[in-house]
Length: 84
Image (cartoon, rainbow, N blue to C red; front, side):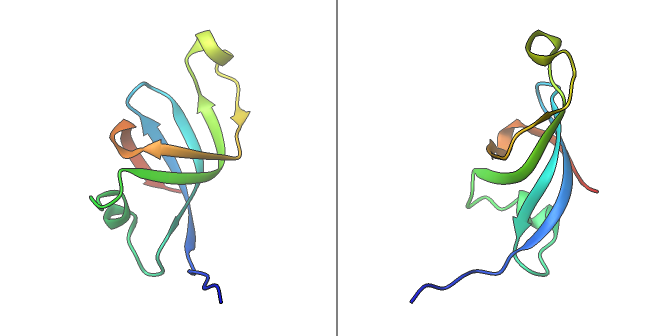
């Protein structure tokens, strides 16, 4: 018997310490605040789905929007995160 954990999807914009900006969805426990989710020390990484890089260094992509499906992001690389 498999159990499925119900999660809430939250749209976020994330600014990374290297200057990249991305948007996507994070999946958190029902009723949990984004602040609590991101500051949970039990997990070092977060999963972001439906990810779009809004800005990347020009060397890589010339600041065009690039769609990715899912990324696993180290929390230490996040400079700023906002629910949108």
